[in-house]
Image (cartoon, rainbow, N blue to C red; front, side):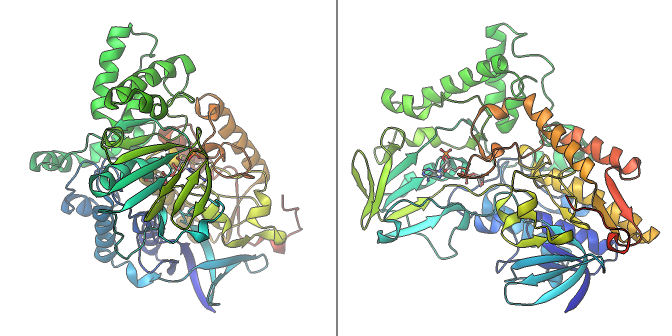
Length: 542
Ligand code: NA7
């Protein structure tokens, strides 16, 4: 059994950053990665049109000024191949690969209370013991597949957007189905529409989208960003969602309609996700949100020629951004093409797959290729896939049976020396996830350095701290429009999942303050122990 100081699970953006950071502290680190290459979701979400919806310069690591200066992004919103090239560059430049074990899926992790160490087991039976266990398994990593009758009978090709095959998938001149209209479906639709013989998009819930306004990065823009990168980073860190956009201080209801129209027009045409901050209360108040929703609906409708299609594609049933909106490049316009059809599943649900296609209650559609853009078991799916057992034999799955319970989204009572990166209870998917990732890992590095210097063997969240944090997460969520819709923020993407608000909606800046405050107060809410808890009188694991 190999002994290390830290096992990091996952070699995506977060896992590689964790490796870099912990290695710098002098820890012996091993990264376990289930796939055959590094890159995480950016390795797997290789569907046509996959693109980041955060600007490239902000969706890149901040830990190395040299890296910032030498990497040249080509587009305002980078496409998946470019992002993967960047991740590979980082892995090579910082010599990270030598500590990454590919094709190594962690299936179990068990905490040994007496020894204050985790025993980690991989699918092939290899084991390690480690002081720290750092989970960088992603929030959108475990693909969710529908289970329509007859799915196995279909004789054409079926692929999932989140597990795009490494072989070439041909869609040109073929009859293609896309099921799902989240970001994945919306991003790939215009690309596939260009060459498919026929494309049918199966929509269950119409989604909001704002234009990406993507463009090549000019030499001048690149020079300008690089001349003031630290300021840009500071702005991102101090903005509510880590995107660098500061909210308009005014309420949407403060301005007369004609002024509001101008504000929305400018934001819509340039800011992508930043549109949601065109006024500070769009995400906080229904009346304010209504003005933004009405604007986006109108702009969307203008892009769609057929009035019947307009009614189906324009979302009317939820507040703007209550579900994760998309940032698209020609999604709605694709429906003006003769070879693109919308299958509205609310009107005519899918009955079954057949050997040649999909039957809805309205008709039979023939396909050569079916693309499942049906999303993921979000937030908890990839955390529950391995069996993680803390003190007293308590598994994470059992502990979280009624929803995730953490302190600050990063630690769990009864699971000492376990650190969850951008998991539930942290800004994660409500933020530029890279900003949140680096923030948390820098915080962890400071904690680990302190532990090592002071001979502290265990950190563990107190039961009280996590109860208070969950209450705080819920309080903050209630101040927003998020709970008003069924969404993966609420655990609604899968039947049977607890309906609780998963991410922290208090913003990146506010969250960072709380992290710092916690550290300044001697890691309030955490017990830092020089001797393992098991060597002292036993407490009840909650
Ligand atoms: P999302 O945003 O979770 O979207 C999944 C979509 O799939 C959504 O429209 C779902 O409709 C639809 N869906 C899910 N299950 C079904 C079934 N059974 N039948 C029909 N439609 C279904 O995931 P994405 O991958 O689009 O986006 C997540 C992020 O990951 C994004 O950043 C991408 O770039 C990558 P529903 O809304 O549930 O009615």
